[in-house]
Amino acid sequence: MAQELKAQDVFLPGTVWLAGAGPGDPGLLTVLAARAIGEADVIVYDALVNEEILAGARPDTELRYAGKRGGKPSANQRDISLLLVELARAGKKVLRLKGGDPFVFGRGGEEALTLVEHGIPFRIVPGISAGIGGLAYAGIPVTHRDINHNVTFLTGHDSGGTVPDAVDWASVAAGSPVIVMYMAMKHWQNICARLMEHGLGSATPVAFVCDATLESQKVLETTLGQSVSDLAESGLAPPAIVVVGEAVKLRKALDWRGALEGRKLDPDPLGRTAGSRASGSG
Image (cartoon, rainbow, N blue to C red; front, side, top):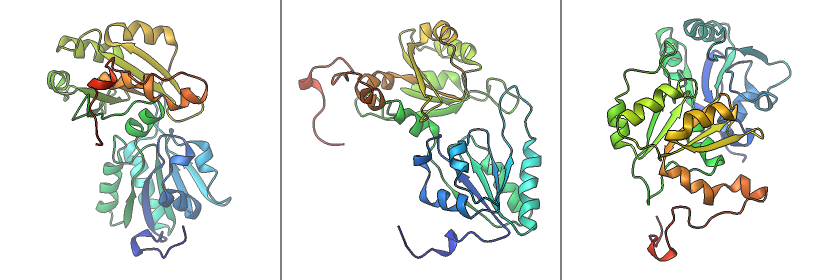
């Protein structure tokens, strides 16, 4: 893809690029992010960045780990932001590499504001968010015209590590046919109870997608009423994406990775006859 670079795409010394590494599979990197990895002097990376992705860096590139994982010692967010400032002022090409997309529950906005505060030039390189790309690898579309015309993305914990009280759970349960949750597994029992308390039925489909897009990806399909016990028995652990709603049923037809391993796909996952399904394109 040889092409003349635009001015905004030139990675200059003394600048910071905030880039998304996607949900894990190196093939889901954007072309621009892959090039930045190969040009950076320093890469400050998160816990969810696949090591295979970091292998694209130059041998002399400095790799600085700045991951955050629940329940484990983690770097202070303010310290990470100021580190980016320090490295840029030293004349480095600084790549801040985050799992997924830096502006989707990734604190990229906080870090960018610190750069603005200190007069550091920067640019944003979006990435594929796990809440979309990770579910696609599980065969679960976040939108489908027979099911939903809106989708809600939310985080399962706030800055203090608890279930966010700022979320209007009643409105989410009543108005969101498909709910996609990041970092929700740790507090799933609490979240599940809130959703059912506000009207979601026990038969509502739920899926947990762990290690999304990686070879180690695992998917648990269950229902809201059985999800707490099924999750406990599964032994699954974060990182995970949780999706609630009828879209989960489409996995019976769209589990393309499962099909490669011999799974027989169901052309009528919603239990409708061919004649009753909507026709045409969309």
